[in-house]
Image (cartoon, rainbow, N blue to C red; front, side):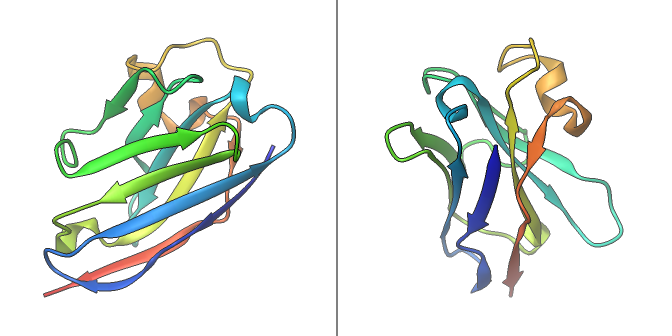
Length: 129
């Protein structure tokens, strides 16, 4: 699976952004998809995950209620709608795909970036006040 993230940018506090991640290959619909982010000098952290059919989602406490993950299997694309952005949301955002793994979305393993099989190149989000 090859992943291409897009949609990042520089925005003001309180505004919104929508990230997209387009996947190539035939495994997208059989992959759990997720978003992580990595602030400068920090470890990659879990943001959200979505099950193969899009029926189950999982969020980090820091973004629950503000961010929404969704997917369109017909378009091989996963999205991250980000609202009420804060300066601490500034980071490089990565989309990931879990194809070989056997955990379920909602589990603790989904929050560990080492449990994901494929990564996109990242897109920068900068939120300024």
